[in-house]
Image 1 (cartoon, rainbow, N blue to C red):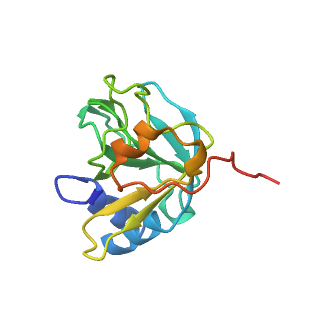
Image 2: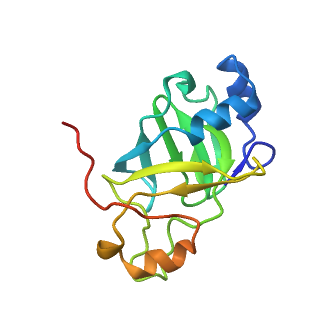
Image 3: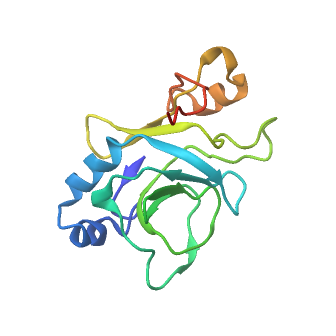
Length: 162
């Protein structure tokens, strides 16, 4: 995942609204485990809840008519990755290069409700990967190949809310 610049045009504004610098926003986004609560209005769009409270912001006052597929956005207590080009009103902070929806795959959607996701910052601090907890024994093999080491699986179990 790329943060800021053309990949995340709202990152600077998000940092300002949260009274922090861009590095702090990235660090908080990368250190919070998110849960995929529901799937959204586009195939593969996962609403991930649990965004760090310091990053809670409203939706943009003026939605965009075009958001690039793969864009990572935040609003309220959630993160989404837009799987396809679409309109959108969330704050764009980055871009995920791994397609979350591909109609040509046997299982076209990679993320499902109940899974957890953590964005892991790479050493060069300009990219991150999404680490999804899922047990290898119960994961679909096409997903593993499609993610090509960018997403690591460790548990398919639904989240424990006890």
